[in-house]
Image: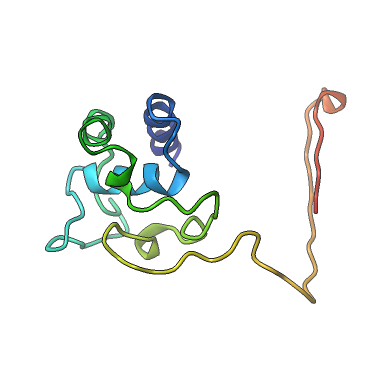
Length: 125
């Protein structure tokens, strides 16, 4: 959802010390239809609720980055799950180490560029 990504970027710009998982979890906690211990229902139409930028900002202002749970020091642990399967504040799922090892797999990568391909660079590891 591009509008949620925009709200995440906006909120993160005010709290750059927070990690990506903390911003994501704050957006979940502050959504209209907020995720709490008693209300963790997710549906395929609205997910965990409608994103609310001001509510996320206010929550971070009041509680700091910890409002979104612990910092994982750069690990992308909970970022791989999306939709109704994503990490929720209060759960204690351990993060997956980043990068996740992948052996014996084949990766096919197709890049479509515009007419300014020389201005862009890629690195695949």
